[in-house]
Image 1 (cartoon, rainbow, N blue to C red):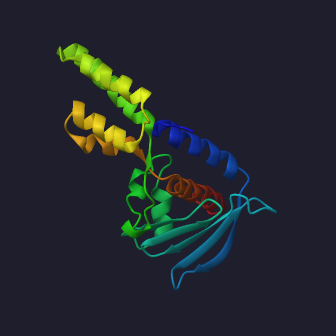
Image 2: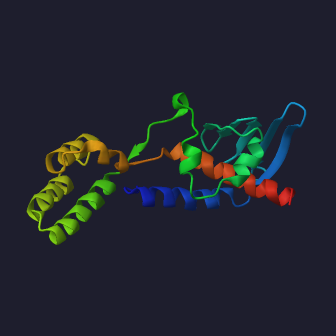
Image 3: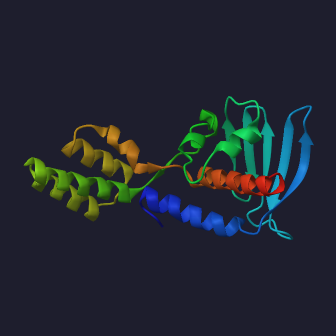
Length: 193
């Protein structure tokens, strides 16, 4: 299992690329008058990693074998809105999840270790007491590496726990949903150059 945000997102990107490589898209509904569009994307003869995408003005939903994601935005043309999004930079899209539809982010213990290493490197240049940071890192590495431990260590040596938010990665299901939308985008643009 990956324990840094970069590794976490990279692993999902690699898996999604392989999972969606042979997908094809079929149209379920294209209702220009009602502005409702529904597409299914899957490998021929299989529903493994298959998903359905629903577009309405200001609304996009993905559901299926990849997990579910709902996005709300201000654009009247949801298909055009998704086509403007770029992988792997999903921060903007992930912020469009309605608050009631946001699975909890995932704690990445490796981010704490990276943060502590950076603080140790910065201390040496600033003549701060690097020994305190080194001890905190040893404590972190030897401990349970839980979110509560991270908060305690940050509070003890840094004092400001806002930094803890940076130790969390977007939920895997949400990231898979974004990759599913990028798969739809690729298939849609191949069909409508």
